[in-house]
Length: 211
Image (cartoon, rainbow, N blue to C red):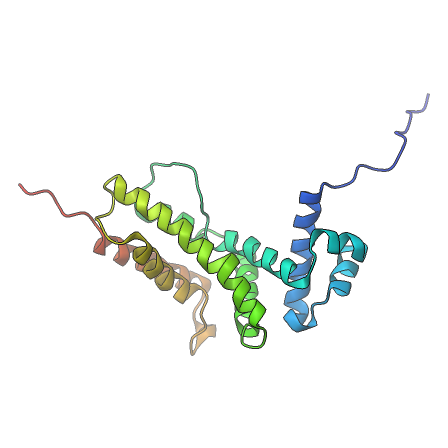
């Protein structure tokens, strides 16, 4: 006896699942052709969907790009995160994703570097990086810093300033290109980032109790 096949159309992806799939494929397209070469027609073709479906989920190219930036932000800064009892250096290494695998690291850096390069030509890119990348990341890290100060793990210091300083230190070596960049390996960058975290934590360490 043959098994009865289910009738009707195959189960479709939810809007949330489809949005995430489109973001991933659009990011690949962006890395292939840049922002200027990325078109909604091209994204629809790459995703195998109609333009009507694409425009329903992302009304404009800028909306799609902002979603791509927000998605990439989560690969750069793992916040928010559940409560944990890790040493601060380990917690910050996890927050800045210093354990990320090399292919994933190359992909996240390729996206942000290309976006930053194109931002000089397209003002909407700079706006997206600010609104969906830099500002939310700063708020999340500021909240984390505030919690560490409240529990006495860091000395009192303007938490937003501390968060901005640490992001500048770590992302400065992870993202920016330098002369002789090809000589700076992934391991070199991650080791330098850990040194930045160590220096930062020593500067904000609470004072030792008096004897």
